[in-house]
Amino acid sequence: MLFSIHPKLFILNILLLSISASSFALPATQATATDVLKASQFDQTIQHYQTKRLAQRYSQSLLQNIPASDLVEDKTYYENKIEQQLLTLMHSQDFNKYYIQRLIQPYLKFYQEEELVHLLNIYEHPLALDFFKQNLKSIQDQQDQSYSNAQIKKDQQLEQQIIELLEPLTSK
Picture 1 (cartoon, one colour):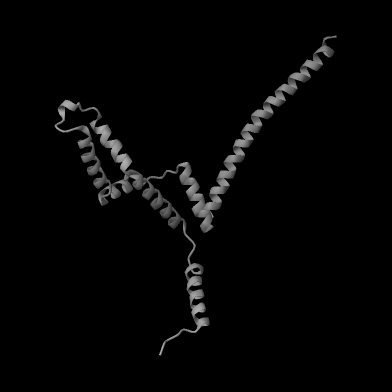
Picture 2 (cartoon, rainbow, N blue to C red):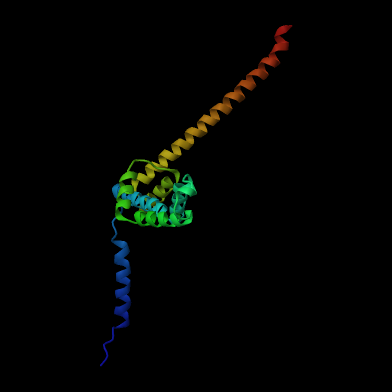
């Protein structure tokens, strides 16, 4: 005898599982959003340092100033050995810990700001609104400054034109 699940119960079960995973998620706090940003930035930086191309560049630059007469083997032999050692060191946990400690500092570059805005906008965090308000204020300040400089020049030109128009009238 085969055990069969009623189709309506099966569909209801799938629906409940999909809803429960998405609807009961808590909104992110500022600390969570910042932690996610830092973690992703650290991961990106560490992955950048773990590439083979970077290890090749380091190994070539290490051997660049050493004359070939001082080496027992060919430079490419040493480059490959140094590259392998660098890659094993770069993929170690100590390297990850070192760079995480080194990168913990309060700085945001442009692409990090974009990532932060995207992250906080997804979570609809109040910090995103503050960021947008600050960004809007800085844009408005820049517009005000550029407008005031342009307006001052226009006013000076208009004043000069008025003086030139009044000059013939006052000289008589």
